[in-house]
Length: 102
Image 1: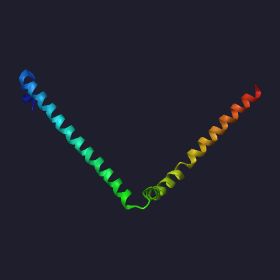
Image 2: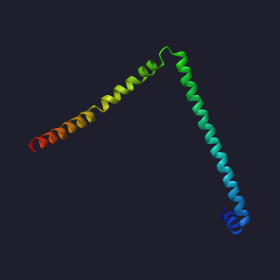
Image 3: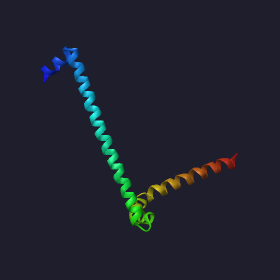
Image 4: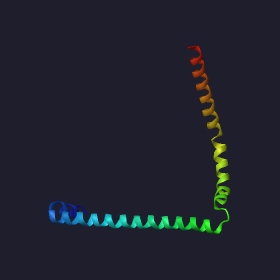
């Protein structure tokens, strides 16, 4: 491996060929990633169309599937919400007291 690297580094022609090959491989890989992304986008859109066509109420179906997760999330963040609410009330109370003393 070291001999190959030494050969590439010592000859400008070989180095140029190596750069072109690496550039070509990078373009090839980027094209494959783009195609994979486009295929994924088509699948997501097709699934959305399928849900829209087959369901009577697609928005309601999505809400019914997401509502248990949202309830769990709401329960998990209830303490954080209460702390933030208490902090805001304390800040407003302090500002009102300062404005009242002026």
